[in-house]
Image 1 (cartoon, rainbow, N blue to C red):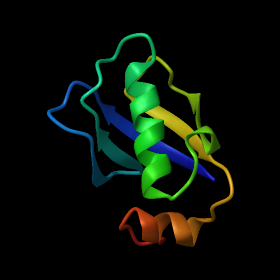
Image 2: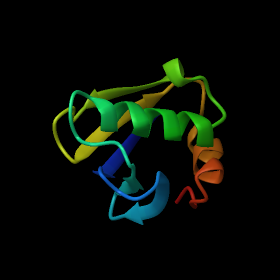
Image 3: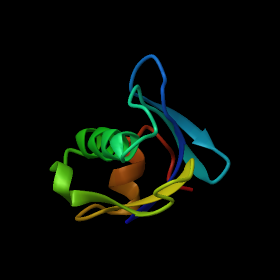
Image 4: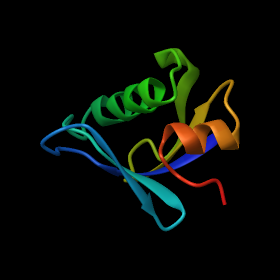
Length: 88
């Protein structure tokens, strides 16, 4: 399952904010350097989806605020429910 993200690094705390257009807005405290924010977002998504950290990986947008992650072993309905979103 591909999860499209709008990343906000350098926030006060790690938080999945909700939908922002066709993306999921996520704030992380990690700075946008050396992949720290990307790892923090992947970890936050893994925790929310009850997955291992290695089951969520970034596939696009490594150096951009608009990123795409792949979560292995989840479907649209379970992902939407875990993230508090509707699947429509």
